[in-house]
View 1 (cartoon, rainbow, N blue to C red):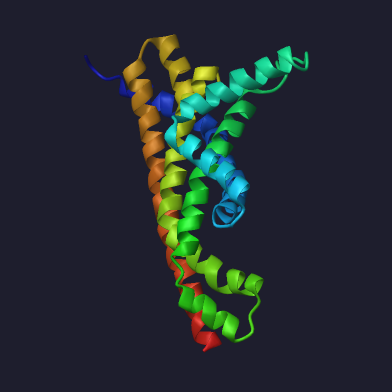
View 2 (view 1 turned 45 degrees about the vertical axis):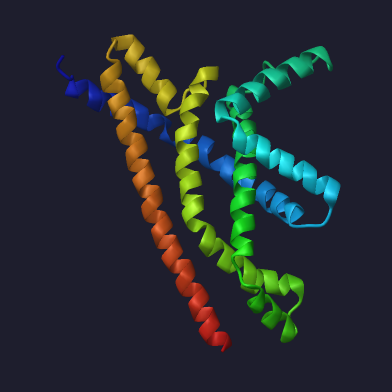
Length: 234
């Protein structure tokens, strides 16, 4: 079988049109999930036993089950619940909204563990030293704990970004046309599935490389900023 390189170029052109939407599906859950993860991380480090147990269950469930299950549960669960309990139809809601909700809840679980481990990586000696010079707990967190926790978390955040970019590929199972869904449509209309998926793979690969490059630059910049801040404070 001979590859049709002209069709690969055509597929690349068509798939490039849905890159913004795919990035929206990938990174919106991470941004929203970061807020959830931050809250859950603090709850899991607290002494509130009942709420802490609920937070641990949430993290355990979402980390221990596939993303596709979350999308199906949110999609079918919300639509059935609204129909049977509230007698309301959710047919007018765009399908990608269910994907965003599922991915956001998933991101919150993973990010809570990343944030928690980043916070715990800061030595207690630094926290005690900050408090000994009169810093409040909020100042200590903002100036000492959070910047170092972010630096420690950047490699894991990079992995999360790449993983969620790839996770968007299963959204086509509920008819959301991101990169993989569009590749399926293009391939089906021309019966050139290999060429279409090669084009999709190239796009995913290039975006993943860009994420790694931006992450490395951000890590270097944040580390430099923290070190300069330490020098100024001394």
